[in-house]
Image (cartoon, rainbow, N blue to C red; front, side):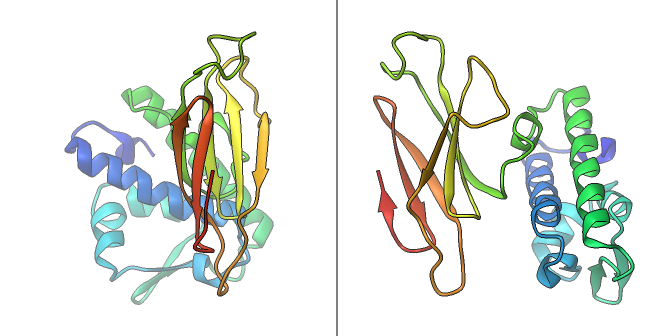
Length: 198
């Protein structure tokens, strides 16, 4: 984890490495039984560049139980779903700790560890959102379960203050893939169902 987060790479390369590793591990945390998440194509250019080439990337996957099998890196069937999820969560926590030590902003998974496969997030300034708490803003995340969750920055809580539903699965895929602030405490979201909601 320390090698992945360390500061001897270009900033853009490190951010991309952290982003891709976090997605791979979060997928296992959330859906450890999925065959597509338990197998990583080692010949994929993006995976190779962001995860396998940088020092520590493949070792971090190995700590989760992944093993090389030809062109793929796989979680063997001997690693149960519960064990895979627990290992991935532990690796994410180690990565967050390494990021903090290296001065990299913490991953969203550190602040809100129960975020369900977050795919998009934004910061919503308090433009009259809560008159009683003028310092409170929102962190909003759209996730693979088609739900948008929002947390107030103050008081801080692991439980979302707002849960917004409305997107749905379409053509076998799920997920809220875009969120943005419209001002005045309002947000807009876009989902894989082809719908935009505000």
